[in-house]
Amino acid sequence: MSLRIAFMGTPEFSVPVLSELIGAGHEVVAVYSQPPRKAGRGMTEQPSPVHRFAESHGLAVRVPVSLKSPEEQQAFADLHLDVAVVVAYGLILPKQILDAPRLGCLNLHASLLPRWRGAAPIQRAIMAGDSETGVMVMQMDVGLDTGPVLLAEHVPIAPTSTAGSLHDELSQVGASLMVRALAALERGSLQATPQPEEGVTYARKIEKEEARIDWSRSARELDCHIRGLTPFPGAFFEADSTRIKILRATPDAGKGKPGEILSLDGGITISCGDGALKITEAQRAGKGPMSAVDLLRGFPLKKGERLA
Image 1 (cartoon, helix red, strand yellow):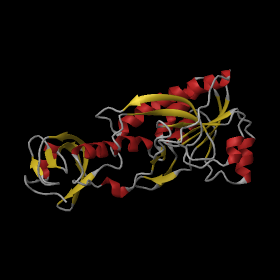
Image 2 (cartoon, helix red, strand yellow; image 1 turned 90 degrees about the vertical axis):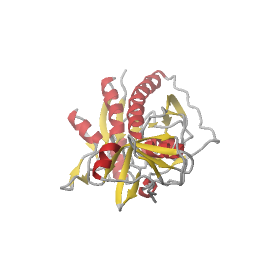
Image 3 (tube, one colour; image 1 turned 135 degrees about the vertical axis):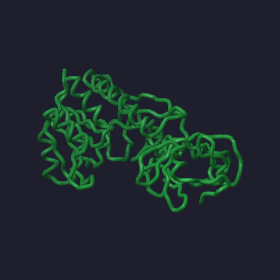
Protein backbone atom coordinates (compact mmCIF):
# COMPACT_ATOMS: atom_id res chain seq x y z
CA MET A 1 0.00 0.00 0.00
CA SER A 2 1.40 3.38 -1.00
CA LEU A 3 0.63 6.70 0.63
CA ARG A 4 -0.39 9.91 -1.09
CA ILE A 5 2.41 12.31 -0.08
CA ALA A 6 3.52 15.91 -0.40
CA PHE A 7 7.27 16.27 0.13
CA MET A 8 8.54 19.55 1.59
CA GLY A 9 12.29 20.17 1.54
CA THR A 10 14.97 22.44 0.12
CA PRO A 11 18.70 21.62 0.58
CA GLU A 12 20.87 18.69 -0.48
CA PHE A 13 20.23 17.02 2.89
CA SER A 14 16.60 16.44 1.88
CA VAL A 15 17.24 14.83 -1.53
CA PRO A 16 18.02 11.24 -0.36
CA VAL A 17 14.75 11.18 1.59
CA LEU A 18 12.73 12.16 -1.47
CA SER A 19 14.64 9.60 -3.53
CA GLU A 20 13.84 6.83 -1.04
CA LEU A 21 10.15 7.76 -0.95
CA ILE A 22 9.97 7.46 -4.73
CA GLY A 23 11.85 4.15 -4.62
CA ALA A 24 9.48 2.80 -1.97
CA GLY A 25 6.55 3.31 -4.34
CA HIS A 26 4.77 6.13 -2.54
CA GLU A 27 2.71 8.56 -4.62
CA VAL A 28 4.46 11.91 -4.36
CA VAL A 29 1.78 14.22 -5.74
CA ALA A 30 3.59 17.51 -5.04
CA VAL A 31 6.99 18.72 -3.94
CA TYR A 32 7.29 21.99 -2.03
CA SER A 33 10.61 23.81 -1.93
CA GLN A 34 11.83 27.34 -1.26
CA PRO A 35 11.81 29.68 -4.27
CA PRO A 36 14.90 29.87 -6.52
CA ARG A 37 17.67 32.10 -5.16
CA LYS A 38 20.19 34.22 -7.03
CA ALA A 39 23.64 32.61 -6.92
CA GLY A 40 26.91 32.30 -8.83
CA ARG A 41 28.95 34.94 -10.62
CA GLY A 42 26.06 35.91 -12.85
CA MET A 43 23.65 36.02 -9.91
CA THR A 44 21.09 34.05 -11.87
CA GLU A 45 18.20 32.40 -10.09
CA GLN A 46 19.03 28.82 -9.13
CA PRO A 47 16.43 26.25 -8.06
CA SER A 48 17.11 24.36 -4.84
CA PRO A 49 18.63 20.84 -4.87
CA VAL A 50 15.21 19.37 -4.04
CA HIS A 51 13.58 21.41 -6.81
CA ARG A 52 16.10 20.18 -9.39
CA PHE A 53 15.81 16.55 -8.27
CA ALA A 54 12.02 16.62 -8.28
CA GLU A 55 11.81 18.10 -11.77
CA SER A 56 14.30 15.52 -13.07
CA HIS A 57 11.87 12.83 -11.86
CA GLY A 58 8.81 14.47 -13.40
CA LEU A 59 7.29 15.62 -10.12
CA ALA A 60 5.19 18.76 -9.77
CA VAL A 61 7.08 21.45 -7.81
CA ARG A 62 5.55 24.33 -5.89
CA VAL A 63 7.68 27.23 -4.57
CA PRO A 64 5.45 29.56 -2.50
CA VAL A 65 7.12 32.38 -0.60
CA SER A 66 4.78 31.68 2.30
CA LEU A 67 2.07 29.22 3.31
CA LYS A 68 0.08 31.73 5.34
CA SER A 69 -2.40 32.85 2.68
CA PRO A 70 -5.84 31.20 2.45
CA GLU A 71 -5.17 30.49 -1.23
CA GLU A 72 -1.99 28.50 -0.54
CA GLN A 73 -3.65 26.65 2.32
CA GLN A 74 -6.60 25.70 0.13
CA ALA A 75 -4.28 24.55 -2.67
CA PHE A 76 -2.51 22.33 -0.15
CA ALA A 77 -5.80 20.93 1.20
CA ASP A 78 -6.95 20.20 -2.35
CA LEU A 79 -4.11 17.67 -2.69
CA HIS A 80 -6.10 15.31 -0.41
CA LEU A 81 -2.94 13.95 1.19
CA ASP A 82 -2.43 10.99 3.46
CA VAL A 83 0.69 12.61 4.91
CA ALA A 84 3.24 15.37 4.33
CA VAL A 85 6.93 14.62 4.77
CA VAL A 86 9.02 17.62 5.81
CA VAL A 87 12.83 17.65 5.69
CA ALA A 88 14.67 20.97 6.15
CA TYR A 89 12.00 22.88 4.22
CA GLY A 90 12.77 26.25 5.76
CA LEU A 91 9.26 27.71 5.94
CA ILE A 92 6.92 27.75 8.93
CA LEU A 93 3.91 25.48 8.53
CA PRO A 94 0.73 27.12 9.86
CA LYS A 95 -1.76 24.99 11.77
CA GLN A 96 -4.02 24.85 8.72
CA ILE A 97 -1.21 23.15 6.76
CA LEU A 98 -0.32 20.81 9.62
CA ASP A 99 -3.92 19.68 9.95
CA ALA A 100 -4.66 19.16 6.25
CA PRO A 101 -3.14 15.68 5.60
CA ARG A 102 -5.17 12.76 6.91
CA LEU A 103 -2.22 11.47 8.98
CA GLY A 104 -0.60 14.84 9.66
CA CYS A 105 2.92 16.04 8.86
CA LEU A 106 6.07 14.06 9.67
CA ASN A 107 9.39 15.85 10.06
CA LEU A 108 12.88 14.38 9.87
CA HIS A 109 15.20 16.21 12.26
CA ALA A 110 18.97 15.70 12.47
CA SER A 111 19.47 15.47 16.23
CA LEU A 112 18.41 13.47 19.27
CA LEU A 113 15.53 15.66 20.39
CA PRO A 114 15.04 17.56 22.60
CA ARG A 115 18.77 18.26 22.22
CA TRP A 116 19.53 20.67 19.39
CA ARG A 117 16.14 21.87 18.30
CA GLY A 118 16.44 24.51 15.61
CA ALA A 119 18.37 25.47 12.49
CA ALA A 120 21.88 24.02 12.82
CA PRO A 121 21.75 20.74 14.80
CA ILE A 122 24.59 18.98 12.95
CA GLN A 123 27.08 21.82 13.37
CA ARG A 124 26.13 22.50 16.98
CA ALA A 125 26.46 18.85 18.01
CA ILE A 126 30.05 18.70 16.74
CA MET A 127 30.96 22.15 18.07
CA ALA A 128 29.71 21.16 21.53
CA GLY A 129 31.84 18.00 21.55
CA ASP A 130 28.88 15.59 21.63
CA SER A 131 29.84 11.93 21.30
CA GLU A 132 26.67 11.00 19.42
CA THR A 133 23.77 12.44 17.53
CA GLY A 134 21.09 10.94 15.33
CA VAL A 135 17.96 11.45 13.30
CA MET A 136 14.38 11.43 14.49
CA VAL A 137 11.01 11.27 12.76
CA MET A 138 8.62 13.51 14.62
CA GLN A 139 4.91 14.29 14.39
CA MET A 140 4.85 18.02 13.74
CA ASP A 141 2.97 20.50 15.87
CA VAL A 142 2.96 24.31 15.95
CA GLY A 143 6.12 24.51 18.10
CA LEU A 144 9.76 24.56 16.99
CA ASP A 145 10.76 20.87 16.81
CA THR A 146 8.57 20.14 19.84
CA GLY A 147 6.33 17.36 18.51
CA PRO A 148 6.30 13.77 19.78
CA VAL A 149 8.97 11.41 18.45
CA LEU A 150 7.83 8.48 16.31
CA LEU A 151 11.13 6.79 15.37
CA ALA A 152 14.83 7.42 16.06
CA GLU A 153 18.26 6.25 15.00
CA HIS A 154 21.44 7.01 16.99
CA VAL A 155 24.68 7.82 15.15
CA PRO A 156 28.11 8.16 16.83
CA ILE A 157 30.17 11.27 16.15
CA ALA A 158 33.72 10.17 15.30
CA PRO A 159 36.72 12.22 16.47
CA THR A 160 37.32 13.14 12.82
CA SER A 161 33.70 13.89 11.87
CA THR A 162 33.07 17.21 10.17
CA ALA A 163 29.76 18.93 9.62
CA GLY A 164 30.05 17.87 5.97
CA SER A 165 30.72 14.18 6.59
CA LEU A 166 28.11 13.93 9.35
CA HIS A 167 25.58 15.74 7.18
CA ASP A 168 25.98 13.12 4.45
CA GLU A 169 25.77 10.22 6.90
CA LEU A 170 22.67 11.52 8.68
CA SER A 171 20.98 12.25 5.37
CA GLN A 172 21.31 8.62 4.29
CA VAL A 173 20.32 7.22 7.70
CA GLY A 174 17.37 9.61 7.80
CA ALA A 175 16.14 8.55 4.38
CA SER A 176 15.94 4.93 5.49
CA LEU A 177 14.33 5.92 8.79
CA MET A 178 11.58 7.92 7.11
CA VAL A 179 10.68 5.03 4.81
CA ARG A 180 10.47 2.74 7.85
CA ALA A 181 8.31 5.30 9.65
CA LEU A 182 5.87 5.52 6.76
CA ALA A 183 5.64 1.72 6.55
CA ALA A 184 4.77 1.62 10.25
CA LEU A 185 2.34 4.48 9.75
CA GLU A 186 0.53 2.44 7.08
CA ARG A 187 0.27 -0.48 9.50
CA GLY A 188 -0.91 1.76 12.32
CA SER A 189 1.99 0.62 14.49
CA LEU A 190 3.78 3.94 15.10
CA GLN A 191 3.89 5.00 18.74
CA ALA A 192 4.30 8.67 19.58
CA THR A 193 6.59 9.46 22.51
CA PRO A 194 6.41 13.00 23.93
CA GLN A 195 9.76 14.75 24.17
CA PRO A 196 11.10 15.12 27.72
CA GLU A 197 10.97 18.59 29.23
CA GLU A 198 14.56 18.30 30.47
CA GLY A 199 17.62 18.49 28.23
CA VAL A 200 16.27 21.02 25.75
CA THR A 201 18.96 22.88 23.80
CA TYR A 202 18.67 25.13 20.76
CA ALA A 203 20.85 24.91 17.66
CA ARG A 204 20.82 28.54 16.66
CA LYS A 205 21.84 29.52 13.14
CA ILE A 206 25.59 29.76 12.55
CA GLU A 207 26.67 33.41 12.49
CA LYS A 208 29.64 34.61 10.43
CA GLU A 209 31.46 36.07 13.42
CA GLU A 210 31.58 32.65 15.07
CA ALA A 211 34.00 31.45 12.40
CA ARG A 212 36.94 33.49 13.71
CA ILE A 213 39.31 31.38 15.84
CA ASP A 214 39.76 32.42 19.48
CA TRP A 215 43.17 31.02 20.43
CA SER A 216 42.42 31.44 24.16
CA ARG A 217 40.13 28.40 23.96
CA SER A 218 41.47 24.89 24.51
CA ALA A 219 42.82 22.80 21.64
CA ARG A 220 40.00 20.29 22.12
CA GLU A 221 37.36 23.02 21.95
CA LEU A 222 38.91 24.49 18.83
CA ASP A 223 39.16 21.07 17.19
CA CYS A 224 35.39 20.62 17.68
CA HIS A 225 34.78 24.20 16.57
CA ILE A 226 36.73 23.76 13.33
CA ARG A 227 35.16 20.42 12.45
CA GLY A 228 31.69 21.79 13.17
CA LEU A 229 32.27 24.64 10.70
CA THR A 230 33.80 22.47 7.94
CA PRO A 231 33.18 22.87 5.06
CA PHE A 232 30.99 25.94 5.61
CA PRO A 233 31.46 28.66 6.63
CA GLY A 234 34.92 27.46 7.69
CA ALA A 235 36.84 28.51 10.82
CA PHE A 236 39.61 31.01 10.11
CA PHE A 237 42.40 33.14 11.53
CA GLU A 238 44.20 36.14 10.09
CA ALA A 239 47.92 36.65 9.50
CA ASP A 240 49.40 39.71 7.81
CA SER A 241 45.83 40.90 7.10
CA THR A 242 45.16 37.70 5.14
CA ARG A 243 42.34 35.38 6.08
CA ILE A 244 43.33 31.72 6.31
CA LYS A 245 40.60 29.11 6.61
CA ILE A 246 41.47 25.94 8.53
CA LEU A 247 40.27 22.82 6.72
CA ARG A 248 41.96 20.14 8.81
CA ALA A 249 43.68 20.26 12.20
CA THR A 250 44.29 18.03 15.21
CA PRO A 251 45.07 18.70 18.88
CA ASP A 252 48.80 18.42 19.54
CA ALA A 253 51.33 18.67 22.34
CA GLY A 254 52.85 22.06 22.98
CA LYS A 255 52.68 25.05 25.25
CA GLY A 256 53.01 28.76 24.75
CA LYS A 257 51.01 31.94 24.68
CA PRO A 258 47.59 31.65 22.98
CA GLY A 259 48.06 32.17 19.25
CA GLU A 260 51.84 31.62 19.32
CA ILE A 261 53.26 29.59 16.41
CA LEU A 262 55.19 26.77 18.07
CA SER A 263 56.31 24.75 15.06
CA LEU A 264 56.25 24.74 11.25
CA ASP A 265 57.39 21.13 10.92
CA GLY A 266 54.91 19.21 8.72
CA GLY A 267 52.17 21.69 9.50
CA ILE A 268 51.46 24.79 11.54
CA THR A 269 51.32 24.13 15.27
CA ILE A 270 49.73 26.95 17.24
CA SER A 271 49.43 27.25 21.00
CA CYS A 272 45.94 27.46 22.47
CA GLY A 273 44.58 28.33 25.89
CA ASP A 274 45.20 24.68 26.80
CA GLY A 275 47.37 22.53 24.53
CA ALA A 276 48.11 23.23 20.88
CA LEU A 277 46.54 22.72 17.48
CA LYS A 278 48.38 21.40 14.42
CA ILE A 279 46.96 22.65 11.14
CA THR A 280 47.58 20.26 8.24
CA GLU A 281 45.25 21.66 5.56
CA ALA A 282 44.19 25.23 4.95
CA GLN A 283 42.94 27.72 2.38
CA ARG A 284 43.95 31.32 1.77
CA ALA A 285 41.31 33.79 0.68
CA GLY A 286 40.92 33.56 -3.10
CA LYS A 287 42.95 30.32 -3.31
CA GLY A 288 42.08 26.63 -3.39
CA PRO A 289 42.55 24.15 -0.54
CA MET A 290 46.14 23.12 0.09
CA SER A 291 48.32 21.36 2.62
CA ALA A 292 49.79 23.51 5.36
CA VAL A 293 53.25 22.72 3.94
CA ASP A 294 52.26 24.15 0.54
CA LEU A 295 50.65 27.14 2.20
CA LEU A 296 53.92 27.99 3.92
CA ARG A 297 55.81 28.01 0.61
CA GLY A 298 53.80 30.96 -0.66
CA PHE A 299 52.87 32.55 2.63
CA PRO A 300 55.74 32.49 5.12
CA LEU A 301 54.80 32.38 8.78
CA LYS A 302 57.46 32.54 11.45
CA LYS A 303 57.99 30.38 14.50
CA GLY A 304 57.34 32.51 17.58
CA GLU A 305 54.95 34.80 15.72
CA ARG A 306 51.74 35.36 17.63
CA LEU A 307 48.41 35.40 15.88
CA ALA A 308 45.66 37.67 17.16
